[in-house]
Length: 143
Image 1: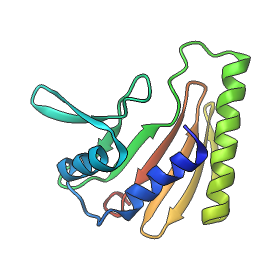
Image 2 (image 1 turned 90 degrees about the horizontal axis):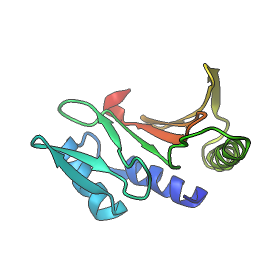
Image 3 (image 1 turned 45 degrees about the horizontal axis):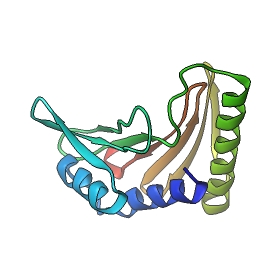
Image 4 (image 1 turned 120 degrees about the horizontal axis):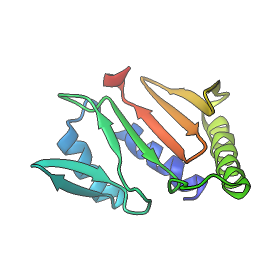
């Protein structure tokens, strides 16, 4: 996924009229992002079919509190090449976030690095781990 696409998705989530129900958020992601809702045991789960595994996690009961999605496939076996790829993508996404939102709050803990920005009443965090790069968008309801 390109850096521009990552921030287009963040902008999509930021533009929603929060609070938004899980069903409404899922439907909007299907319509605007091309993501898919898969039903398991009668519950709809949002997935991004571009990545393996494709799951997107949403928290919240009455309205969505946060949305977490990967911007890379999950790495099955860590190598020097996978570390370099993930680190480079993380750096580029953080660089663009800094240009858009100012300096990030950086946190390193247990082999993972988080870069977090405040977006008005919302918050976005880019996470680098040894297996993937992911984004967590915390809605105003999740703050």
